[in-house]
Image (cartoon, rainbow, N blue to C red):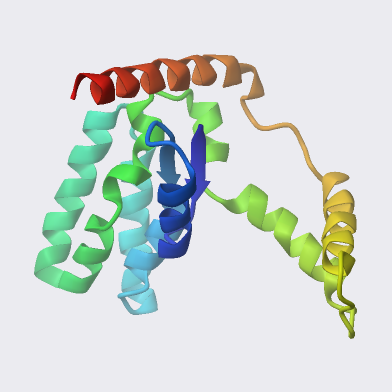
Length: 183
C-alpha cells in the first residue's frame, strides 16, 4: 500500500499503529514546501518555494535528494528552523522518486490535494446542519457529501501507469518482507 499524507504527526502515528511495516508513505510535497517557506517573509518565501519545486521536479531519486540536501545546507546558513523543517520527513517526500513512479502519476500522488478537494465538498454539504442527531446521522451526511464530490472526480492523470506502480509496490513489499524475515 502507498499512503499519501500531509505532515500530520497523528496521521503518521495512526499509520504506524494500524498498517503494515511494508506499507510505504509519500508525504505531501506541497505541504513540505509550504512548511519550509512559512519560516520566511513573503518576498523570500517565493524564492525558496521555487528552489524546492525545482528540486522535486528531478526524475531520479539521487538527483532530487542531492538538490534537496543542497537547499538544506543553504537554509542552515539563512534560517535554521526552515532547515529543520525540510529535514523532518524528507525521505518520505521522495518515496515516489525512489519507486521510479512515472512522472504523470507523480503529479497526482505527490500531494494530498485530491482527497482535500473531496473533503472540502463534504464540508460544504454538512455546513448547514445545525443539530447533529445521535446514531448514524453524521455518517449519512458525510456519505451524501461524498456522493456529491464523486460527480466531480476525474481519472487520475497517468492512470494507465497504475499497474506498473502496483507491481513496484508489490515487489518492494516482498523485498521488505524478505528483510524482516531474515532479521
